[in-house]
Length: 338
Image (tube, rainbow, N blue to C red; front, side, top):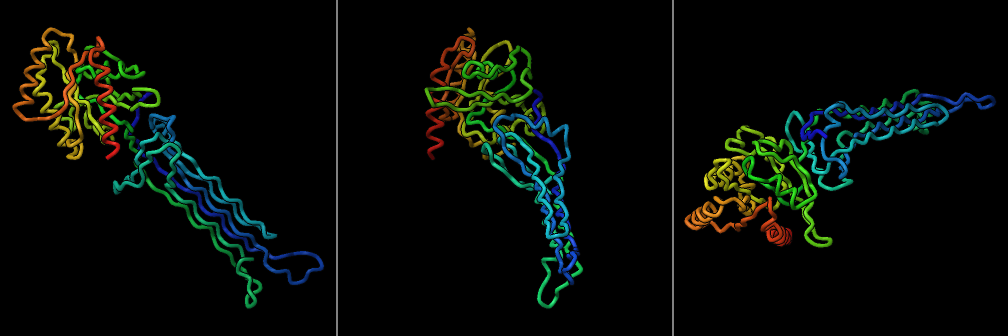
């Protein structure tokens, strides 16, 4: 399924039905009074969060959503039927914004949560409503109220407890495949992962957390380089970041530089994101060159007096994975309790 996390759509609620002007026309009943019924209410456009959905793909292909109008009132005191509401299901984590102003209207963060994006117009009153002792034969009724319409921007931000960040080929996809049931595409070339991957990590019975593998964050990501700007928003909701570093000679990367660059990009994108708790994960420790690079990185942390927790693991062999999972879960439990 194609991953779509931004769409622009037009919503329009239904108009209210007009009230009816009608008088009784029955044999043997002279001077029949007004009996025009009220119009029905127009349908609302309602967004509902659905945990079974993971993309805004359907909304990409249907960009206009219009609810039905309410029925008009009729004679014999018959009121028009209210129109049914138009329900639009979206993934949990969808933010609804006004397209013109950019104002956040609602953030759907729980399964089944609802937001009325456009309220249907109220039906007009029929002439029977206006009958009074001094005005016994009103020859007028109200028109139905118009509905609301607006252009909206929908943006999906994944709901995950932990975000996996790191340069391409650091092994994030391999890690998420080892600690959860997620099966992302894994290959030895940059930008193998083109969409975020979610996985549920089971720690113990009835104890788990959700982790997201965030692709495409490189130097300049906060300015739109690579895929990072498109996907940085998906780590905004996380409580904890696992910063994955690559010690291999194959990618010719410098872990210290990667660590500093990626933290700089987080800060440029969002100061609050840069302050998010981090656990440093040195992956690929099964490689011969990894041990020396790990010692150099530990010396760097000591010089900089950084107190970040560091784990050395091998996603390929499974070394250190269980310890990382247990520590991550315990830290998340502490963070949630604050």
